[in-house]
Length: 138
Image (tube, rainbow, N blue to C red; front, side):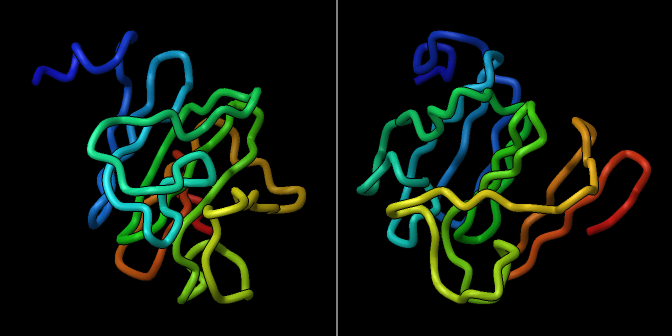
């Protein structure tokens, strides 16, 4: 099925993990499809889904999404970075091993550092890199 028939508005980004996919619309809404056994589709999606389901309903729209093997990141226009899924190797930025997303969406706190809307996130199997246009890496 053509992707235009699935969404009521244009997509600006698609990110694929090991067995899940995120979709970002022009208005900042985030949809997802695939497996969510570790919470990689966030707290609004409780079971695996073969069709796109709304994942992010915060009042702040997102401008960027990224996925890793079994985790996801969403960047809000206010600078907040949300993440969910596996944290078995600290890939969600929290020393507490485990997972986020089944009951909560984790918000990362970088303190005074302002990533701005230039942030980009690259996720791998069990690691993640944050960078901006000036190539500051976190």
